[in-house]
Image (spheres, one colour):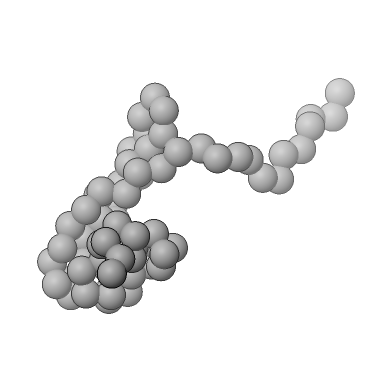
Length: 66
């Protein structure tokens, strides 16, 4: 059986780890020195948790013209 954290990560952060609802909302994210965080709540069951983010790469980098 998957832990709530594993279930949430497996869903790509799109489903509540408690009830599998897709009615989740977050405010933020708030930046920190080494990443960011965001409080999240399920609108259906009321579960709350904090998403944590770390930089893993960049996309669409364009070097400025000289």
